[in-house]
Image 1 (spheres, helix red, strand yellow):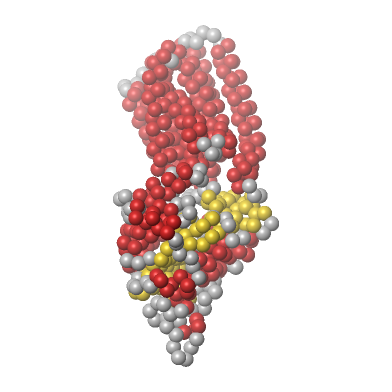
Image 2 (cartoon, rainbow, N blue to C red):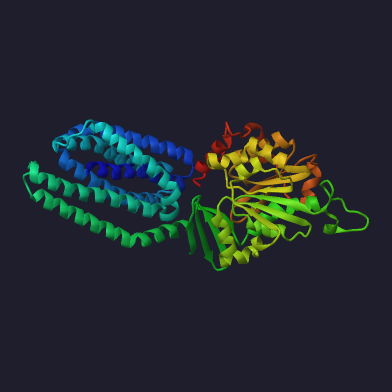
Length: 520
């Protein structure tokens, strides 16, 4: 029976750690740093718990039960505390991190008190076993492995964070209840606990804790709505949780917005300005015969002179870029590489989104591939005339690789001779160093680039980098594209940044420097 309880405890341990890391990463950003902090805080708590467990061994039978009840209460409340802390302390990263640190250390301490107490319980109940510690750790590690797999594959996509927290604290309370029953049955023979009021007392405590949990469940939706209302400021249209991200659609009158992991991706009121800069401005190079094989002949004019071309759109939510591309008759085929199948489903079935993207993904010219863009561009054998990259900002290692020199080398190989590549590159005003790092990295591969920007009400000043597999005449291009270049106030940063590579992802440092500075 005790080994079964140890198995449940082990599941809780690893899920505590994964939950705290995931929640803090979503709220704060910088998943690598938050993962490191979570490990450090949790292990600090384990060290504290291992040391102080010696003072609890005298009443191990009772203290183990108390620890399980306290753990269930703390964990049931911790997600709520962290979200409220984020709401009211959002402008103070240190204050939030302190609360996060305190809760993580506290939970880590209680978790690591359990093992010594279980070992002492074995002895006091006179349970015969060849190796107590070996049995405990064997069951611990087996269920750690299982829970580590369950978290990303099943629990996070289907239960999401708050429901996972409910799952965890219900397990701890279940352990307390089962252990109390087990102890009561053992006590009939061993008479270790002579006062029967002890069992009545803790049955009542477990009952009251259960009522507390039921109360939290009844108000959980109100708490979540309160949090969402604070964060998004607009009425929530729909929310989704996938294997890859949290997706929220909001709508106020004609203002439709999409948020991925709480970061805005588009605003329907000005997304046309963004996609005009990303798609339509570079397309002017093709329209005016600036790429090989597109020059007008004597017998034709405009777009009809241009040979059919193939376009590759890489990742994220860019069915809006596809919408703009479909306006050009000379585009023969569009390949959209999107990691998350749910995004394709939303763009094909959600009424407001379909209206915005003009049902672009149902067009026979569009070929959709659900795969990671990094993996796709590395393995594809196809060549494309025009490649558009519209990735999320480089907040962590997973996104930083999409702005690396290695990635751009594969882009260069995939691009046909004398054709063009364009990428979004975050805010030129706020993330200036990250911007020039991307520009310098692209230059190191293509040996040319055009950095340009456009003002967007929802995103402030936003920038893009365009490159060509061939000669790019920078001086003559911006007037033809109607784009805006950069003045000297921006250019000084270009000399003080490094190229971003897989082995040295400097862009994360540059981006997070801006993130911390402006509390974004």
